[in-house]
Image 1 (cartoon, one colour):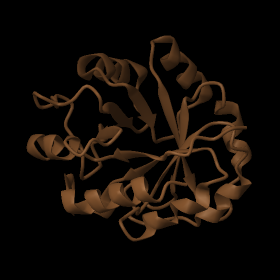
Image 2 (cartoon, one colour):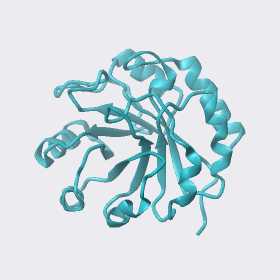
Image 3 (cartoon, rainbow, N blue to C red):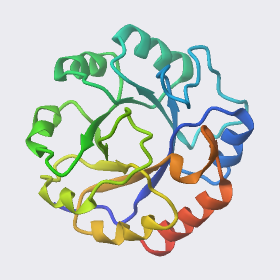
Length: 214
């Protein structure tokens, strides 16, 4: 299996128009928008993207145990490139979304005892997996998990990693050189307030990714 050497960047939890454009100017590969009402980074159901947002940045809608109708509606309304499923969505639900033209990022919450066999049924319905720290919340726990656990992963589906990633610990991405990592997902680790990203911190992360690829 041949893995890519370049690790991409997703910045998640965006909602402020000016901040979205500011972050987009740094040319991340993905921007994530959270459609989960209990999140402090919730964008509201009628959220619209600011004019001038580059089409080069892929747009990800983040949902938790949401209905297909609502997700597909938001996908078309906002021209989302991916649906990120952060709850207990079934393989069948993923299949139904794929039939509607969606590309899927399926999230798994990781702790020391996680059984990667749980990912197997989703191999054919997910474009990517995302491995996040298991905690009290559906994401946004601001904690990293033990990344060495990913050595137990079968590497069949390319993945994102999330959970407390910042300019300090992102240097450890060199440890992923033999894994099928696609991107890192940065949220609370580069914020000045919930939903507001610090461009200086993101620049540091981008510099590390570009000068120290895995």
